[in-house]
Image (tube, rainbow, N blue to C red; front, side, top):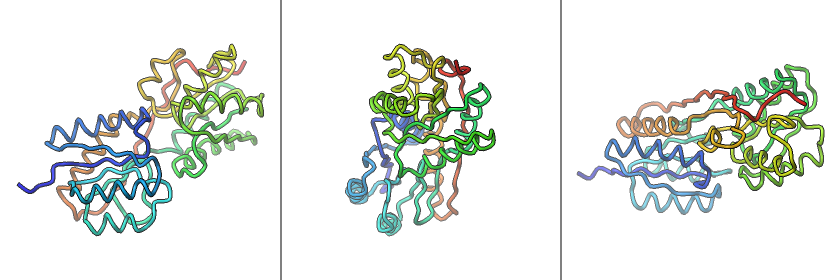
Length: 277
């Protein structure tokens, strides 16, 4: 048969463990349905993304699961439309053109995390990590700031830093140099949260005692860390399964209306949160 049995995944960062767990969920489900999955990394760069998509179209694969790069132009969307490629966007919605979408309830998640810290007695809480241009991060900051406002806490600190362990170490030291009164962090991702925990331990402090830290994603490393990381669980493997089911539905019925799923999250309290000292 001439049926195209390969699905492409084009994401913004393969090195992030969250994405690795999502990819596993996608692959296991699609391979069970007789599809091959190939994964490409756009590095969150529009030119890199364009080259990847052009190669993807040339090899005429059966569908695309896609995290659009920052500032993806309308021409990229039109290119996918012209070639009638079944597409599901993930995490970030496309600003032009409606595709099926699987995302997270970002504001609710950080609202819950921030409220938890406030209930422990924290009032000097910073939002830690992520890049300024990210729409997903803006939603998360909104949840954090809303929880502060509701508790009549006027001070909000938003600290930009790439979402990885190494930058978590550097950024934490810089944040504490500028805002030494900080007692808690709501982090944009688990990797930067784990970096912050490591930085605290290096200066003889204990995450959950001197400073409380909440991550985002609940990657496998979060539960295995010492101390184990309090975080927002997004169940990345299950997200992958949902993405796989969504692309299969779109392949089976290409003309159905596009649908957006926002997946709710859950706060997992472990050992990096406690009352302020």
